[in-house]
Image 1 (cartoon, helix red, strand yellow):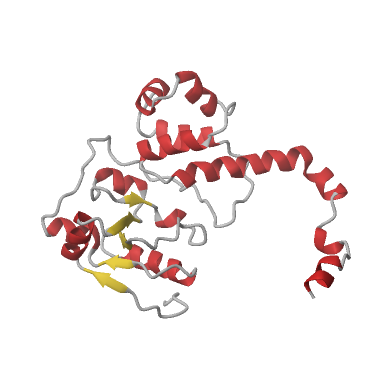
Image 2 (tube, rainbow, N blue to C red; image 1 turned 180 degrees about the vertical axis):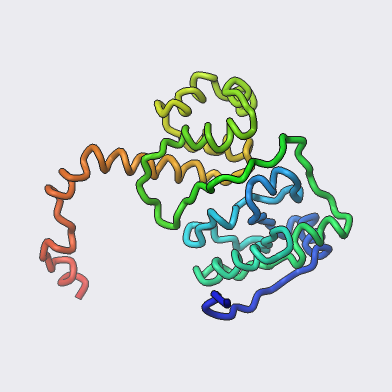
Length: 236
């Protein structure tokens, strides 16, 4: 069944061409596979933005370099490219054949000496619009990363350069994930920084809604319903 609403013609480049661009600093390479795939093997210098968390509206506007997307064989990266094009981005380039073609060509990859890939689990879904969530980010950190990778909080705190008390407070839901911590976790677990910040924002929204949502709804009137025509008169 064809679920694609419209045909979008994509520019593609073979792996040798992409390797040449990267060597000359002419391209930014984005890997749209999932975190566990990236952890097993990836192209040096590639930035991880899983397709499952790609937000085309907030994705950075890349203009000074060629934006090249890749996945395992080129299918998911093609889907990601179409999302970006539909959102008004400069058309990215799809790397033909993906990582499979790259390795078959004998080009360099990085392989992490990590525990086996995370077991099958329900993905943490971050929608295009951040919706309130009652799941603390620390719970996601513990259940989706620390436990499956058999890490201790002590090991994590040492590896990402934060005090154990800092990590423990996040896991216990007593401390928020700020931008600095998001960068550290993203680097360590090969995710995007936005993944962690979205989790925190969704949780904060839910807490604010519970604390004062009813009062705000009752006491604040949306601007568009106040009936003022002053701004329109000035504009005219």
